[in-house]
Amino acid sequence: MGIVSPGFQGRPRSAEPALPPGQYLTEDFPVLSAGPTPKVPLETWEFVISTETDAEFRWSWDELMALPQETPTMDIHCVTRWSKRDTDWQGVSLDVLLDGIDTAAHYAQAHSYGGYTTNLPLADLRGGRAWVAHTYDGGPLPAEHGGPARLLVPHLYFWKSAKWVRGIRLTTTDQPGFWETAGYHDYGDPWREQRYQGD
Image (cartoon, rainbow, N blue to C red):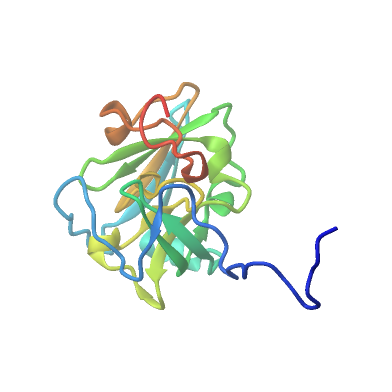
């Protein structure tokens, strides 16, 4: 029979929750973009949800600001392997924007000023898991990080959180976006290391 000293606890465990596999922690907020940073004046900015029947629902900047706001604090994970903990945002939940929109779609494709696109299952934009975010760390979202507004879908790799978002097209079929057509994973779950097609 083994002898255990009184008070022996084994190895100390970190109080920090685990990172997704293959990720490292950063205190910085690296800037990664697929093209030049567009400059979008607030007076001409708009967000449009279009359905598979071509119905459109539009919000100006002032109309977006008048909607109920949320302040999520979330870890974010980039496919280039960095993770950043406890990032502070403010924005409008996609639940609010999608409320009352009649659709049979199961997919969404986000569109950005500048031409970037990315695809997601519509279910991943619902249930308090996605926002149109306009504020980061207490101030206006900087342009290099997607300002004036970006999609925020923190449970997926960050390329799914489209910068400079201008709208979402609801579709009945999955339509891959910019990085997905270049070989990135259609879904992009960091906890399953879905970086590239076939992962």
